[in-house]
Length: 263
Image 1 (cartoon, rainbow, N blue to C red):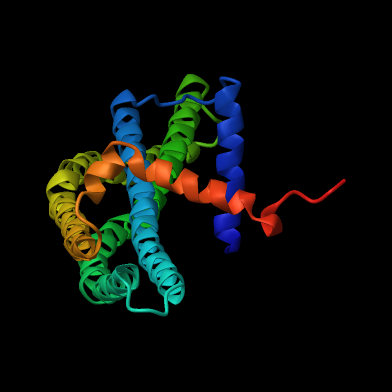
Image 2 (cartoon, rainbow, N blue to C red; image 1 turned 180 degrees about the vertical axis):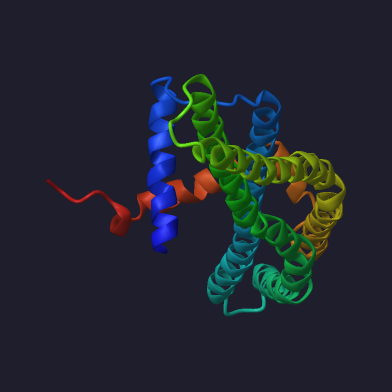
């Protein structure tokens, strides 16, 4: 920070303190405050969207990888040519294809149509925040200049050059503040209005890719079902498969090697 910038920071800090004690007039712009609140809500929601959109892609990758590891493990249980072994092998092939498709057909398009547009929107916020902060500092300068000018009007100085100098400082501060304020009051509502048409294509792309991922998963895994015995779905719905599992577990418990150790 330059020496001039340091002095301005000190003066603005002093102005803020004097405003709190009522020694310096404070401009209350409720219209600008309302726009700032709306903008801050957009910033908050956009950053959350960016975070969750990335988390979704990471979760899909993790899901595909986990399915692959499960399939490899299940396939390793079988070393014969039974229907169960064929089903395990078919399951492994299905999830391998899903994992490959995730990397090939979901990852890059999702980045291009969802993550990059949302990230681009979020990249504007730091610059907008700097502009808002600068506008607020210029308002402090304007309020301080108005107070100094008013005091010289109420109590003229013995130095005749002080009032013209204060008038010029006031006019300069007013021009700079009003220019920045007008820009933000014009552009902040435009930014808010553009958020929906800007994000709509990304939202549509995200839904379509999620639907495609789910449909392909259903199709691939559905093909594995033909290796199962007829009526498995009905048995599952009736709770018969649960009973079968419980029956096998009971048989395992009856094995001496699965018995509880003696105390």
